[in-house]
Structure formats: C-alpha cells, structure tokens
Length: 109
Length: 113
Image (cartoon, rainbow over all chains, first blue to last red):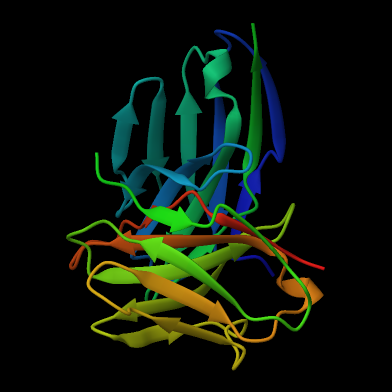
C-alpha cells in the first residue's frame, strides 16, 4: 500500500484555468511534507515545506496547504511554463523522503 | 543561489562494470543523500550520510552500493558490479543541519547495457 498517493495522475488545463493537485498520506508522526517540481530529465526542484495541519505557503501562482491527512497544491491562473510534474514527499521517521508518483500538469495557451 | 551539482550527467556502462557517480552538495550542508528514479517510476530513497557515516539506508542499498565523502566537497555513490536493473536517474541531495528540506541535484542518467 502506497504511503503517499497523488491525484490526479495527469491534469490538462487551459492557461488561466485554476485547479488543485492532491497529495494524501498515511504515515503517522509526520515530520514534514514537501512539494517539488520536476521537469523532464531534471532533478526535483524544491517548492514548499509544510510541517503542521493548517499551515499554508505561497509562491507566485502556487499555494500549498496541509491537513492531517492530505495536502493540496493550488495553482491560480496557470501559465504554460507551469507545465511540469509536481511531486509530493513526506518525512516520517529518519531521513528518507517518501515520494508519491506525481501529477503531470500540462498548461496550454 | 547555491545548488547541488552532479557529474557526469550521463553514463553508459556494461553490465558488471563499476561506476562512480559524483556530487558536490551545497557548501554549508551537512546531510547528504542519494535517491534514484527508474524511468516512469517514483523517486526512491537509497541512503543518507552524516558526519562521515551512513545514517540510514533502504533495502535497495545492498552490498553492491557504497558511499564516500573523499574530501571536503565531494560525495560519491559507487556501484560495484552494475546490473541491467540499475539503469535509472540517480539524484544527490543535501540539507542543512537542523533543517528537513532536501535540495536535489540535476541527476546522473545511468544506462547499463
């Protein structure tokens, strides 16, 4: 059973069409939840760290929120350059990040 | 802005050969990590390293793998006898002491033939 589940697997949006990506997790004792952006053939690029339920972080068109069981990455008025795979990862005990499979976002103009 | 660098960007090797993947973590970071991503799959943790020793390793990180910090700036992953299934992107990451956020490098694409 996956500990981190992201949905949807793929999302196609028109430029300016806002939406949300979901990351649900089943780990106990969450020490942090992380959002990364990954472009094809590249390494994960850090976006946000969330530590506790109710926390929110924003950066440009992106906003990440956290509850006790899931996190959302809200994308407001996306642009084509926001097209990428968005990865969610959690830190439970130890040092190992546990990643989800990601949501591949395509934004067309 | 400081970033993690990795060399080489691509490596092709024959099955059974040894490979060494190199990483230069962000300069003031003290925790170092290796992850891998098989094409089309999740990013998977291999090993973490702190204070010149392994902190944690996954089931993937068997006796074929080893890590080393040969000097003050480099961090290496060695695969002793590569297998076809070792073909993947290998990512190095680093983090500051007391901070949970891990910053990733651009990766090395390893192809084992």
